[in-house]
Amino acid sequence: MPVLNWIGKEKIVSHDKEVPFRLLKKNKKYSLGESENLIVEGDNLEALKALMPFYHGRIKCIYIDPPYNTGNEKWVYNDKVNSPKIKEWLGKAVGPEGEDLTRHDKWLCMMYPRLKMLHDLLSNDGVIFVSIDDTEYSDLKQVMNDIFGLENFITTFIWNKKNVVQNDARFASVNHDYVSCYIKNINNNKFNLLPRTKELDARYDNPDNDPRGLWTSVALQAKSGNESNIYKIVFPNGVRWKPVPGTYPRLTKESLMKAYREGRLWFGKTGKNVPRLKKYLTEVKQGVVSNSILLADDVGSTQMAKETIKKILGKNLFETPKPVELIKRFIQLSCSKDDIILDSFAGSGTTGHAVLDLNKEDGGNRKFILVEMEKDICRNIT
Image (cartoon, rainbow, N blue to C red; front, top):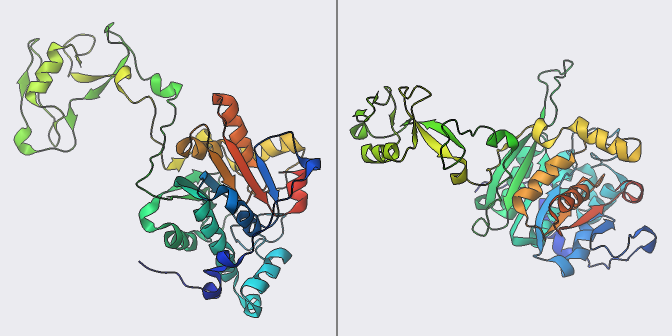
């Protein structure tokens, strides 16, 4: 498997083991009752090491939105690879040469030990989702392959973060982000199905009052098959059928006649149209598989996330916040109602918001752990 190298890697690959254990100190001033949810203020590397004795192998879902490393240092939070705290840490972990690293080297040095600790915190059937853009996507993919294993890669979700085209873009209006997804052990889990929508169920009807209930119809032919299986048929009602050229029968001749006898074929309102096979609502999965392309209409957009933050705080300090519905989607796919969800780049606290919303919706008892480095953001926003 190809391996990614960068300046400082040899000093950082085992750095997670060198980080000393620290104690978590409860701050009663900011605590709310006896909640099992946890917000940790401090560098996420030290915070993750402090969580390790309590949560090693227990976290079911991790979502992180790390710095995208776009080079934009003008705004408050998400791109501070050159922040004083990161610079100080690089000086200690990598040494004097840390000052001479490119911003890509710095980003990789920052991410690698944190991802290793997140891997250790995941349960064997746990899943991690990492938001990123084109700037570091290829590097992230290689590092994730190294730490989590290429065989445990699930997919890269494409999030349609905005629908408005930027006409001042130099080459193309970038309307998407990536969310890279890995599981701790590919043999230990599968994703949950998403709830069926009203739009999906609206496709089912019962125009002939079939006692088996609501149904939709599908064509009797398929795009693939074997030439030797092609046949013509005349049904007892006089209708003739054969697959159109280039297609193949979906059912054998015997199965098709059985469907006819059982009233599972629809010949249209006249009873003489090209037949179609009934597919009953009671026979379909009571849920749907997630698409890898996540549309803003389904999981929210950057603008919707900004509006949510502004509604709660009166202002928005984040350039690219993530919408609550996006994080809810990942939790729905990977978690049961009693699991623990971790976000070690918490920012505005969207992951905690998503957990609380889901618990309200289905009576769940999910818990969240959020880690935020910036003191003012942690205490006043997260």
